[in-house]
Length: 564
Image 1 (tube, rainbow, N blue to C red):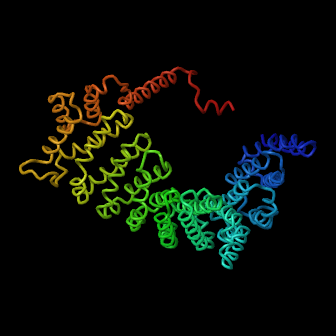
Image 2: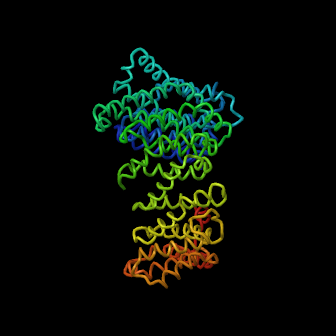
Image 3: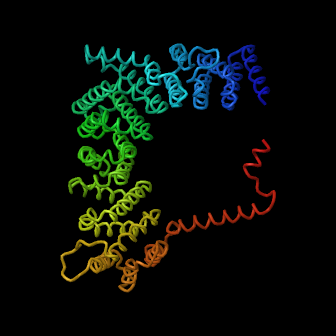
C-alpha cells in the first residue's frame, strides 16, 4: 500500500508538470491535494515525503486558477492538525523545526492569497503551535510572537499614525485593515490555545483604545444623524472592528477553559479592563449600535470562569439587562440575535452564578423573572422552550437554597403558577408541554410537601396549600367558564397529589386539556410527542434486535472495515 501511494503521488506530480493548460493542471493538483490529505499516518512516518507535499502545497497557493488556492489552504490545515508535532520538532537533515523555516518565509507564502485564505494559513500554523508535548525544544511563546510579527508590524504602524493624528484611524481603509489583522488574531487564538496570551498581551491596550474610540465615533454619529448612521460604510466598518474585538475576547476566553492557571490569569490580568469598557459602550450606545456579541462574551465568560464571574454579575445586570430587555420586549420580532443571546446569558448565569444572580437588588430580581415569563410566552418555539428550561433550572436551584427560596416564593410563586397554566392552556405552546408539566409538578408538590414555609397570603388559619388550591380553582373558573365545578375541583386536587410521578402528572394534565372544549377539536399529537418518540425508539430497537438475531442479515461496521 505504501509503495502504491508513493507511486500514485509521484505519477500525479509528474503529470502536473507535464500538463499543458491551467484547467488540466488544476484537476491534477486537486487530485494530489485530496490524496495526501487522506493519509496523515503515512505522512507522519515519512518526513521527507511530508515536507515535499507541504512545499508543493505552498506552490499551489500561488496558483490563481479558481479553487486551487482554497483547496491548498484547506489541505495544509488538515495536515497541520494531523502532523503538527513533525513541524514542531527537528527532523533529520533539517537544522531547525520546520515551523521556524515556514515563518521565516511567511510573507512569500501568503503573498498571492485572499484575506480568508491568509486567515486559514495562520490558523494552520497556530494549530502546529497548539502542540504542548514535552519533547518540544523550542520556546512556543517566542514562536507565537515571530508568527504574528508581520501583522504586529502593520498594527504598530497604524497605532503610531493614530497617535500623531487620530483622524488616521478613522479612514475607511485603515479601519478595514485593522479588522483584517484582528480576524487573523482570532483564528490564531482559537487554533493555538492559551499560548496566545503572549500575543494578546502585546496588543491588548491598543485593542481597548480602538474599541473605545470607535464606540465614541458611532454614538456621536447616531446622535447627529440618527439610527441610520449605523448603515454608513465608515461606521459599519467600525462596528465590524468592535465585533472582531469581541470575537477575539470570546475566543481567548474559550481557550482558557482547560487550565485553572489560565482562567485565573485571564480573570486577574484582562477582565478588570475588558468588563467596564464593553459594559459602558453597551449601556450608552443606541439600540441599533449594540452588539449581541457582548452578551455572547459574558455568557462564554460565565461558562468558562463560573463562580469567578460572580463579582461582576451585579455590574453586568445593571448595564446590560434592562437595556436588552427594552430592545427585545417591544415586539416578538426585532433583534433576534440579542433575544437568543440574552436568554443564553440568563440560563448560564442561573447555572453557574446562582447566588450572585439573587444577591442583586429586588428590582433586578423582578426583571429576571419577568424576562423568563416573557420568554416562555413567546410564540417562537426555541425562545419559549429556553424560557421554560431557565425557569425549571431556577426552581431546582431554589429547592436546595431555602434562604433564597422563601422570599422568591412570596414574591413570584402564585403569579408563576398562573403564567405557566396560562401558556399550557392557550393552544399556541403545545410543544412545551413536557416542560410545563415538569414545572407545575415541581411547584404544586413543593407546596403540598411543606417546602414553601413563608406565608403566601395574609389570611389567618389558612395554609399555603389551601390558599393556592383556592386561588388556582378561581383562576381556572375565570379562564374556562365552560367547565363544571366538579371538573375543576378534581383537576386541582390531582395537581397536589404527591404520589404522582411525572408520567402520571402529565396524563392528568392531558385529561384536563382534552376535556376542555377548546382542545377537543384540535390536533393534540404534540401533547403525546414524548410517548410517540419513545414508542418509535422501542420499535426501532426491536427491529434491530430481530435483524441482529439472523446471521448475515445485519452488517456491522467491523464487517465493512474488514472488506475495505
